[in-house]
Image 1 (cartoon, one colour):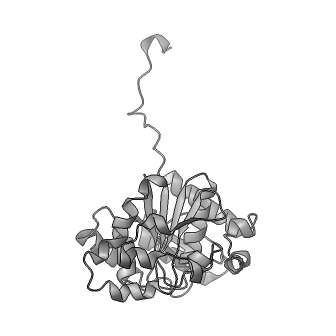
Image 2 (image 1 turned 90 degrees about the vertical axis):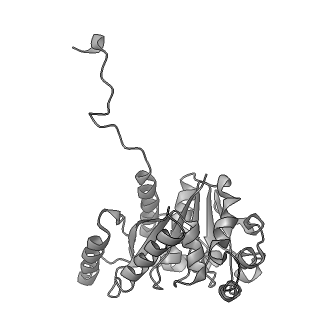
Image 3 (image 1 turned 120 degrees about the horizontal axis):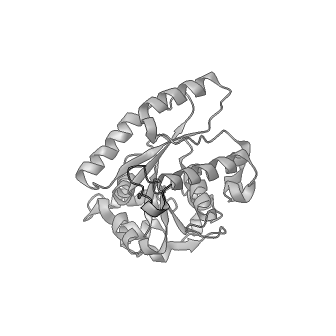
Amino acid sequence: MAEILAVANQKGGVGKTTTAINLSAALAQLGHETLLIDMDPQGNATSGLGFDKKEFLPNLYHVLVDLLPLEKTIKASAIQNLSVAGSNANLAGAEIELVAALARESRLKGAISAVKPRFSFIVIDCPPSLGLLTLNALNAAEKVIIPIQGEYYAMEGLAQFTDAVNRVRQSLNPKLKVEGGVLTMFDSRMVLSNQVKDEVTKFFGAALFNTVIPRNIRMAEAPGFGQSIFQYDHKSKGAEAYLALAQELLARRAPAPPSLEQAPAMPLENQA
């Protein structure tokens, strides 16, 4: 049964879609059947994995507005174990059309329920806003990963966004938790980047991922070719970082080793 992760931040330009694409690709590369859902009307997660977003039909608009089964929008990507439910600019109209709809904030959650058994992870790329599309994603998700750009305005809106997550938890989705923040586009040579890292560490505490995503030209180039960083340059620093992020995410789910108190006692005949 799939674990559902929303990659979200109300601030744009923080590496949200890059993280959604490459975390999904890394999980798939590690052998986990993964579905990437593109809930952003810009459709960049769709095109970033090689699909023509204008021709991606049916898509998330039809799921949310027409209640089309999500299964009918899922397509296999060029990456083994990674499928995509895509979107395009039509999805922007869904935000308006859903205003008066019944159970408007639960449309995605209901749609996902039918495909959860097929996947190990479902990753949702959210739009950079706190509208109905993001609300649907947060209502459907179990965990939220928040990309934070390692630059001056990194903390802008972060407290407001985490407050919104708390409100969704209280009113709609009691299972929703913040998995953690991940620093993106990070340049360790800059004093400012390290100052931002200190502030973000104070904000998230232990929930901040240890993995830091560096500013990397190969990663910036990859979407133009409709490829993840692993397809475009699997030896790049960006590929190494996103693979490490996926491994860290999986390590958080590994059972803890038994403590001395929990460890079974040795049989008397085996004791010295």
